[in-house]
Image (cartoon, rainbow, N blue to C red; front, top):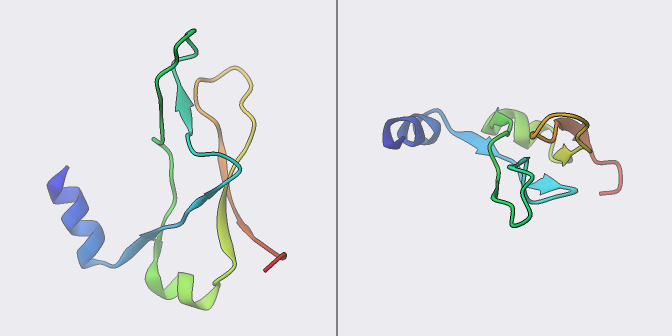
Length: 76
């Protein structure tokens, strides 16, 4: 994992904050384990060109993963 994190830093990838939730996965138990497994990693140059980009957590259906979308936030 350290090698992957180092790669992300070297190539200057950005993990945008999530909108609409904190987690993208849950085991759906009574006392659920939740974590953020899914994400977009974007070039810092793209983020500078499109500063209103956001990752949005969408409602899930049958999967244990919430889908995420990459969108332009027109509110800002």
